[in-house]
Length: 349
Image (tube, rainbow, N blue to C red):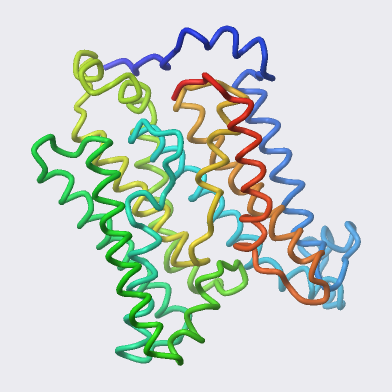
């Protein structure tokens, strides 16, 4: 079956004339170059500023110098930023296309709330503190939250529509947040441990945790690519999508599974980081339009770039310490998203 065409709107022509548009190929080139620059900055900048030649030599001609040791110590953080940023960017694009809601983000299905709840329960009931254990708690909580939310939406009279998914996700988030708040109020030790994970950071993940969870990210990426073309049809409405031969329920379920794997794993590795999945797909649409076959891969590269740049900003502002990336994405992401909303106007999903 041929892929559905990208949805259009009456205002799309005038919007294209008003905004800056690139061909998808050139946009991908620009995003990849920006990502390489962000990776170089992530490896070079921190409590110790490393010259560019030392960054290059750390991998090609290692000699154990202090500068090269600083570069190698930042590799896990840079890899985490790449994977988490890409996962959140793609997850946000999938959610906005699946739910036909430009304000949707990975938290819409209760991913962050479910992950947070299971982390709190693990700390409170079993005293789990090890980073790898916390990662698996968060991933399990994200999966359970989405299964419950999607199941509730599917059991409603209209099935798993964008509206019922949003309502079910809001209900799951409300319940999980209430339970978390109740536990943290009465358990001070859990509050002290949980607040460091809750703020969102790229420094907690290790090469070991990245290796263990990399398969989930890879599977989520495959599912995201597989359903990206069908999102064009879903954006036109369920009836039109069915008329084009798209299996709406199966396509939406595939997108949900991709969001669980990508955003659940990202939340497990770095904590609940906001605005990446919300703002990045909007920026990508301003560049290339509304074709999800391009929005999904471009959101991956742009999301990784945005998160790495925010992490570098946090290191520079708090030298010799580190300002956690979850704080920086909120400070940078909120005004950026408002500016994008003012510019995009009538661009359709």
